[in-house]
Length: 483
Image 1 (cartoon, rainbow, N blue to C red):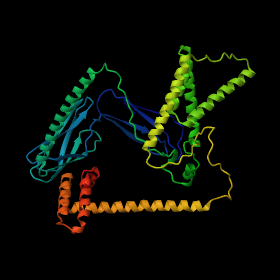
Image 2: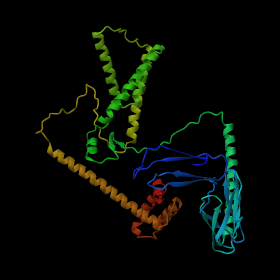
Image 3: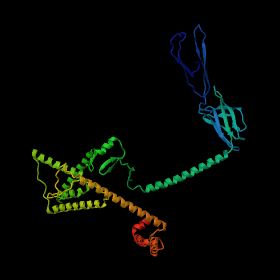
Image 4: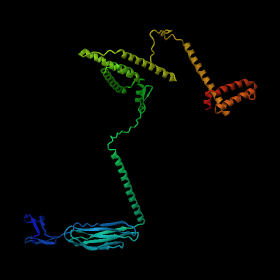
């Protein structure tokens, strides 16, 4: 280069053969904002022509970004809508611009069509859309800037108009106002809640209770036997058949033993604490009172566990030297309280059994053994001879049972027939309460006594029936029958 504003640097390797290349770096160092021009001369020797490469350097408004499409959307007739296109320059040089209308439309107005972009400033081009009819308007503009090597930019401007746009705008404005009112109301409501929470700042922590969902029982107890309600396979059937009434199944036995062991440990701690406090043998009384609330299997298991602990303690005394001071002898008050507790427990058991017997309406076959005194002797001693059987008495017993069953059935049939006859007679006479029944009975009695109803020979029988009906009218069973 011939000027001081351009400088080149390269690493010359020698002659360049066909197909080879060499990089030449051109450095530009301007001192002011203006246009610069220079050339780079390349000498190719005597076998080829020399080359002259021109170099241009110029400032540019690099921040100008023009949109390719400007859409005004839908605008109502009689309204106007404007949009601004900024033309910015960040260098201290002004640029002239010019706007050419390639395709015009009367609904669009562009101002200004030409001007100057100030140094380090912005010039605005305003496009106004004022629709005159319900249609789509389109216009094309071409922007050109007095900048070296600037390519003109074509911008399309589109706008439309449709009916009911004013109504939609009013609805949107009303919705915006309603949203603002709702937001103000929410703000007021939340402010009140915040104030109420601020007044409760010193209260204690709120207890959180998780919801409890009812769980469906998978087993139910029937006469002391656990029956599954969800499974009906052969395994569930064998599980029911292998159980013994009143005893826990094998799968629940381990948890039951653990609970009993924990209960025994708790009871021993309570007894030790009472003994240390000087309350005597209160634990024995507690054991007697606690036996009322537990079943026989639990009591047997607890006794067996306690007995095993005592037996283990005795074996340890034989193998090791342990202090065996023994328990303190219960006082007379403790013995009296234990005896009273036992008597009360016996009285409660008898009362409970008597109440169960009173409430029982059907015969129950019990498999429990009956305690008899040792001095009891049966009148007839069993001979245990299977060949010595009185078959005739057995037949008579069968016949007697049959006669009793037949007589009972005949009595039931006769009573039901007479009850049906009495119901039909009461229904035919229109009897609905005790007073009407009494009047009907008196009328039938008078008619039978006067002989106006039925045969004369049957007057005595009619009197008897009338007296019986009069007695039945006073009975509560007839009242229930009438109801």
